Length: 117
Image (cartoon, rainbow, N blue to C red):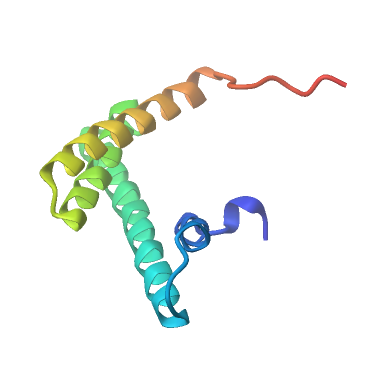
């Protein structure tokens, strides 16, 4: 199992439990389950929305598909928190992040070079 095989929600849950100690083991289990399911759902929504828009627009590698997928995930997060402001900002933030991640992969952007030996 590699680093990228670990579910992101599980890692986030572990950090959250360490930073904010729960009162009991049951509270820790509930908190970690809640965060993990939320992150897994956001990933599923992102993947589904990205694939559906790519298929509907007949443009499989278009970064706009990734923006739409990220925005759909952000809208879910806003609905989950019952906050229109959270949904709007998460839509724009996650959509922009996904868009530029796709553009960066297509154009070969590097955030850091190889290590100097």
